[in-house]
Length: 455
Image (cartoon, rainbow, N blue to C red; front, side, top):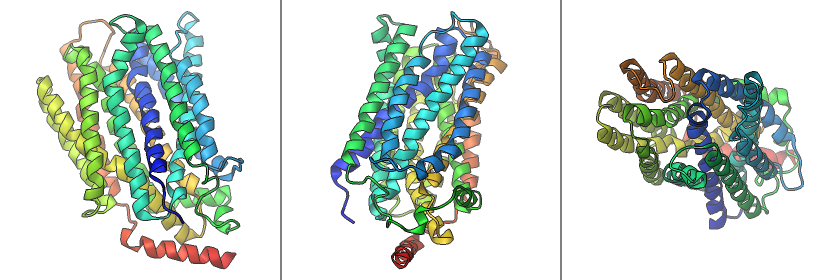
């Protein structure tokens, strides 16, 4: 199979840059939009986002088989990338419209439906996107390169989002404050950016319209839904990385959701928010560039564990030094170097699991296995929105009201101590991951021989 061009690798990373820029907006500022702009209570916001995320999560195992069995003329996986992007544009924009003029029960239901639809649209695009990693190439080094470009694009997207989102909201609002107009126009622009990123990748991969690497007619491409489901629930490394990734994503989502409140109510300087997210994202980019060198010495599993231990230690240090805003920022920057490690290698690990599972079972369920990656994000998102929104309500936070010492301690715990415990669980789960990377070339060669024999 021909080597991947640099443009394809760039396009793969650029697509995630655009996507993560948009997703960072939703993960960081949707809750802020509800509580600080629309003045919806944290509990109401929690209901909207939790039920929306539950519907979103239910969709993930359903979408995997649908995508796997689809047969569009533009390609099985790449077609969904483009389709999903247009729905992302639509629902991301609608989410930032002011519906509070409607009866309370009506706007809560509508926001819940729109939020679920937005999240499902991101599933459609991202399942197709991540599935491309294993379909574009079978070369282990190129898969790591694709994952590295994705990780770098992810980090650059977060850097741009960290520095630019709040100033952009202010700019389009025409005022140094958060307004409905600012959020609505920003959401529209970010939706258009997502369409651009995925549209470019769609065009760049025009020569990879099918699976890209599979032999047509092989039985591995004709797996039933029941067989795919059985493969997922009986696959030890897949279940291990599912639990680990849920905890990994939950750790970062809680940081993203809670640190704006930390700077608004504890530090009392929201202007630091862009600096915090911008600097930590820069350090995360630096961390992602280190991964190819680290994986020459360590396995992907060891690299993953190293990163989670790294951020766990940083969060504990931040919690016990939360009164020093400068020190918190420094520790967070150092911690985010480690966050990049599992964020980069995990996609390549799912590709390894795809090959390992096909060798073990004789069936290829690539889209379903990669939908588990998406499922981990969704499960983590359900917990993060619940913990953040209901947690804020539980500690007694009220928008615009001077926080009590109990509220301040609660925000610190939600932003730092709780995520530290979750990251430790990720380390424990990853200990059960049992794919032997040294044997994978032999397994892939055996899979290829089987396909030739079947034809």
